[in-house]
Length: 90
Image 1 (tube, rainbow, N blue to C red):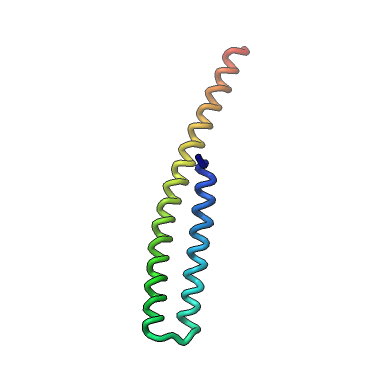
Image 2 (image 1 turned 180 degrees about the horizontal axis):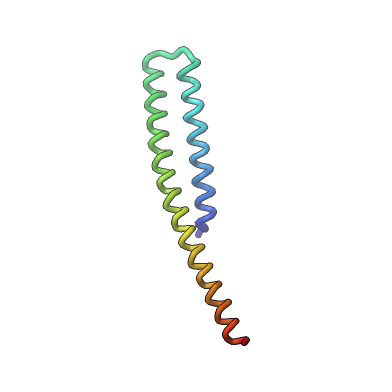
């Protein structure tokens, strides 16, 4: 089972790769002489990639929210241990 942090890192890498692919397609659309069908195919691919990026960013937001919750629980447990230690040692 992978940790939330590793899932976040993997998703960020995946988003970056998709964004790079969109840049390559955009550059091809602007700089290359393409037939109408090639252009339509590239526009379709770019649209699909952008939709995937939006979905992945939504997932990334959910993972980050979960990570914040986990951190808050960890801090709360740490504070309880410190309070317990202070009560029993005084």
